[in-house]
Length: 173
Image 1 (tube, rainbow, N blue to C red):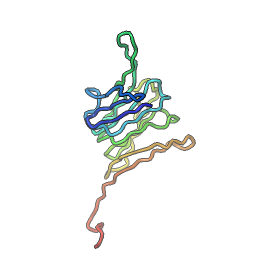
Image 2: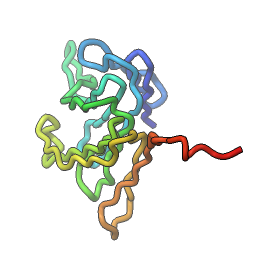
Image 3: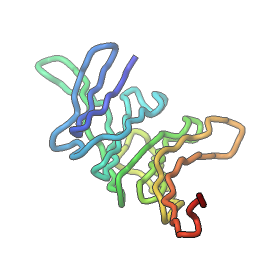
Image 4: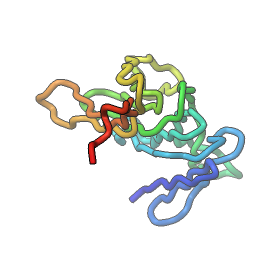
């Protein structure tokens, strides 16, 4: 079983079949805390696809690629592309595989961004499928796709709404 672990220093640690295989950090990684990590369905290629988001406003797409080292082949994870959001990227999820390779991102400024790839073998070529502005007085904190085959594409979003309290809104004692 494969697992990815995020760390506050902008690092991702990949644990493949119980062993720590690679730590993703440095010049091609996040510069701040990583909030969430999501795996794409393995149907989208024999090499894994991983997305990460964080405080640094980045969403990074990682892919595992074969590397030749001294007459042997090994696999390493590399950054394929990144998206800069307008605010901290709070959460991200890949859509169910029957909807294609799509990624939804919850942004702290109240926006949901949805990205779509026509060709999963070319992760640098994507379409910004939708930008949905949900809130002007709060932030989007989490999201989840409806996995049902027989229902329209549905995304549920959790939000933190900043209330505009006035004196009249205070409870009377």
